[in-house]
Length: 174
Image (cartoon, rainbow, N blue to C red; front, top):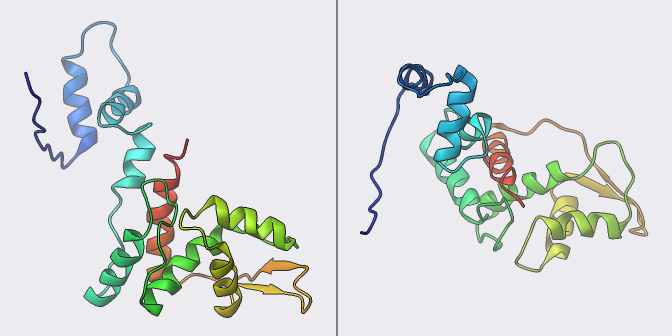
């Protein structure tokens, strides 16, 4: 017998879990346990993972939302970049994700930066990513290239949307 997926949209998961708990076989489970079981049945690690993955994008205009979606499309389900986007506006959003991977207030060697970048991309050009971090003012390096440092700044709304979505995806990494 083949299984065909049946989409299920639940507007209020908490209310759904409360109702389901009333019909749960003994022993009874708590509300948080019911939410966790429902999330796990849907393929998530726990209720927090489900909430993070399904969180709506912030209110952005149509063009900004399209840029965010284009940026997210170049990352796999575990938040690793699979290809470099063509548009500069999308590249800027993608490079913000790599900026968040760098430790704050720490000097790093080129080797350390490369290791971080390579762990978050699969298309094989960490040098491009490192150069873009510098060119976009997200990191600095000494003139001899021996020491790198993340630049502290607040991401804009589009960058925050990309970072939030990719942070949720990165939770699924093995």
